[in-house]
Length: 323
Picture 1: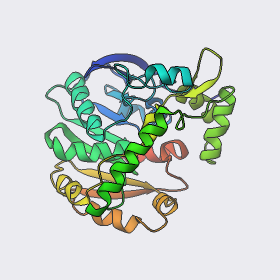
Picture 2: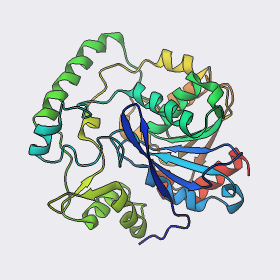
Picture 3: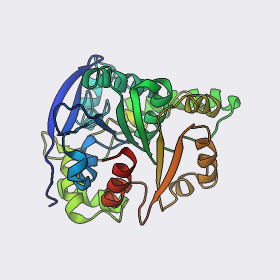
Picture 4: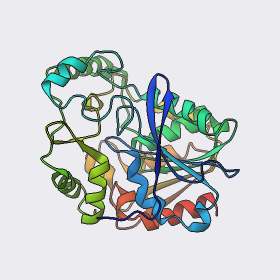
């Protein structure tokens, strides 16, 4: 199994009525800007371990590095195995502290509270992957004074929508809520951690077995029956009731004052996901709204580039943020 170079320590922080799980590497406090790492959809903070291990000693020395599990993921709030069995689902859905859907603005507010806790009055260096990259980009435009430098890892945003799609989107959201309450969106359990590791390697063929074995034990956990369940709430699978409004997003992008590095993988994830409905060319056009932006590509990598090429990524990050 993969052996960590830098061990993390865990902390639970009360944020907006939720116990937020946060991983720490490096110094507990420092005069240097904290490095904040936020993960993507159906991922966990531990996913950044390989990149943290690949960072240079010069960069890490004297620096605080933190990574939260978003609400409903990992060890935060109502994540984990909340809805993995029908009896749990019947008891949990709709009960106090167990929402049956998640709203994107909550991630921005959670991040705002977390930065107030860990870096009051201090600008931070913010790195976000995928969904976390989208959160980071929006947050940097809404709170530009809180971000010193920004790194977006494949946080592409979503395809443009039209007002005429609004009614259908609300209907789909309500239908999926009903599916959740019927148990139809439950995440698949696995017999053991090895099964989770094999799943991770099927999803990402570049992920080595030793890293898959390590990550499986952070990405999932056993329940009372011994089955391993992904540490992500099934309610995250429900479509957003609100349309993705590109005009609003670009207005926010224009307010980003931090130097921004947009990193993408050599594999074209957008082409795979959207089949021409949203392209890398469109994403690059949107990036032109960011006042100070540069781009980079991690070679021989897919969407999980922080797993595929952590050394390449660490070099780009440290070069951009500065030793």
